[in-house]
Image 1 (cartoon, helix red, strand yellow):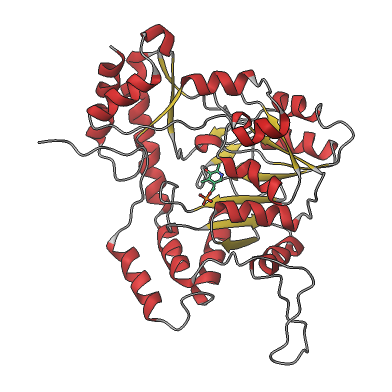
Image 2: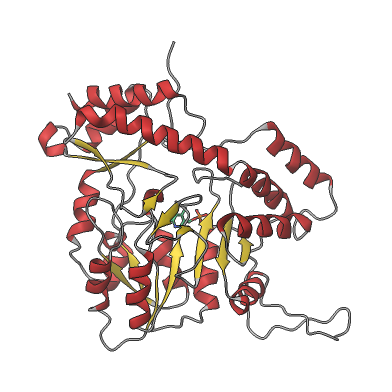
Length: 386
Ligand SMILES: *Cc1c(COP(=O)(O)O)cnc(C)c1O
């Protein structure tokens, strides 16, 4: 019997998730209704933030963050080159310029050293925000990055779609990604491959009440209803967007969020199994480096492969894996090499990002995988490299 291809990631939707969606569909609201606030409150409590603002997707979350900070044309935002396009693009949506930070070649993360190098490129421009990404689910060194950003007069915004459930310990204090102790905001996505899924969906967390109000206003056309106004009255001090997350999807998100402990435990168990199964292939194949402070719920099982040593190209390996029923993906093509950014900023050299890109490959990781699937992936990879 032919094996079904294991995708690199996929959602886990169960009967009770479907039931809450059906219930929301029979309700009165469909869009802005009680499930929105319920999901937001539960999300804020889960990650330990004061406020959570739901929005249509992770890209909208980033755009709202830039708008809420009033980032303006000609100002500058720093983003890592190894990330999804949206991390950099959100700066362009508000007319700001992007400086691409390099990453550590073994973890793929922005580091204090790569941030310092990026800061040296700001020149006379006004730096507003630094957007580190918790790539794969491992947390960046938030206290160090926050210190550097603050010294440069910028705020930290964590792009955290990979790291829902990740905890870290920078000193003696246990922290959770999204609790925004070191940053102004953190953004999340509920795309099907992410840790919880709503199809499309996003969230911004913040501990700043004024930012939360601004995010909510900008999420819904920039409309405000001044107190004491007529029942129909609304005003628009500045235009916003329609970036609302419908009640239907918030009901699904809330149901999914309740399963986070189980999803996280399964992802952690699968990561342990991967470590054991891939160990014999070291040093040709190594799992991406985990920083000492990070206790991740991994979104991606990214391995670094010394393709030169194997005599196989990544394309050959991807195709050989696929022939054995194993899906894989590359996270990510360095964003600074995209045609749009090359045209805008010219060719740049970011050796860490390029070294990461040359070796990275993400293998299947999602709660629905069986233990045997990990062994199958490992033996398929061994065969693909042989
Ligand atoms: C998924 C993702 C986004 C965008 O989220 P969408 O919900 O797909 O818009 C942004 N940044 C990172 C790092 C992501 O992984």
